[in-house]
Image 1 (cartoon, helix red, strand yellow):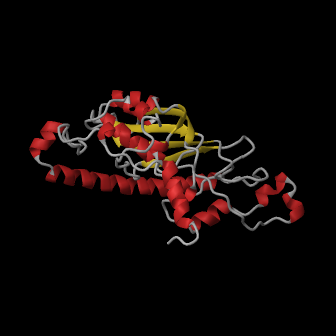
Image 2 (cartoon, rainbow, N blue to C red):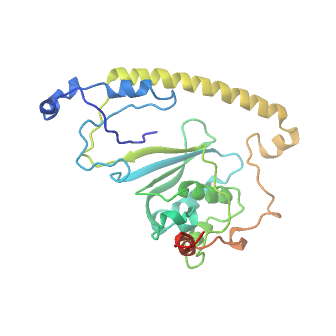
Image 3 (cartoon, rainbow, N blue to C red):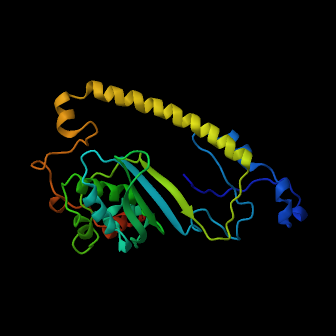
Amino acid sequence: MNQVISLVVRSNLTQDEMANPLNDVKELDYVKILNKVLPEDIRIHSICLRPPEGFDARFSCLSRHYKYFFEQANLNIEKMQQAASYFVGEQDFRNFCKVDGSKQIVNYKRKIISSSIERTKFGHKTYVFSLRGSAFLWHQVRSMMSILFLVGQELEEPEIVRKLLDVKLFPGRPNYTIASPLPLVLYDCEFDHSVVWSKTLTSDRIQFTKFNQIWVDLGAKYTIATTMKHVIEPSEERSKNGSNNYSTPGKHSYTRIEQRECLEAPDNINKRWLRNRAPGCK
């Protein structure tokens, strides 16, 4: 929701005027100009006219805050909270990501600042996996959420997180499906205090008006989808599991993470990619 990008744009000021911050009020209204050419569901709400030298939207970021929204349904929230707490700290997350040999990543350690399951203010059965860290691997959050869902469904115990963080026990990631990207949001990015954001009252009003309409439209779609769900859902399923239950395999047919085949270890994936890139290889 608060993603940051770096842009090189033309200015309304002369070089001499740029030297004085007081002239910033005469600068082009970048928020208004850029929002005119963006889709309705992508909005710019703030700008930093004077970023520090060498600023990079990606590499200057001190921490990132992700949120993954979900409904409680038949999930054991207490166990999910316990499992989520095991992510905190600097740990090797090679078993919670997708490895790409072309990136040649050799360090899979990442620092998680906070990790928790919280109830949202949007409904007593709506929760969010709130995660803050200095940096993340490819598909890391979705992989973490996938394991948390298995714990919530009581197909795995919370300790499975600790086991997967043990690279001696699991040198390669067990074969499991990562969670859907749809409920995942990059909620905020933290930068040094030298990055000062500014916005106008007019832009705030415009953003609210546009997003309020999006909210109304999505609310209507949600109501229609919920109505259709109740129409087609078998009554015995509704009475047995509740109207919003997750479709989960029975415990008798579920293969536990520790019993699954492991994917190739990251080091081997990197070596294989290099071999395939060597002269004479196809």
